[in-house]
Length: 138
Image 1 (cartoon, one colour):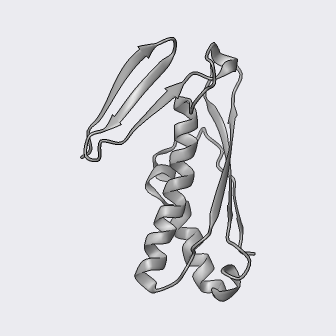
Image 2 (cartoon, rainbow, N blue to C red; image 1 turned 90 degrees about the vertical axis):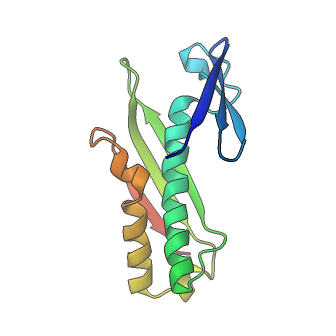
């Protein structure tokens, strides 16, 4: 269990604090939804959570097995639906740097892809959200 405290600062902005670490961040409503778009929006955090979760569980498996995925990048493109607003699609591209993917066998890459596709955030998303995932192993 983790406690997170959120304070509404006004003008569609929040301040969130992760109690265990004390780390903080600000959210802002997007410009297309009456905000200033000066920081991550709540739905941006869902997209961010998905990408970071996928690469983190890949990193955990790689660490357990002695593999390296250092330098791997993830890009998530969030698509919102017309009103009522909701996340409709999260397109994910996982890209390993040149050289890293080539050092991993097809079986290892398949295992890492499976782990990523079954990360806790992905398993928590409703089926109503499309989540196409592309892996580019360099």
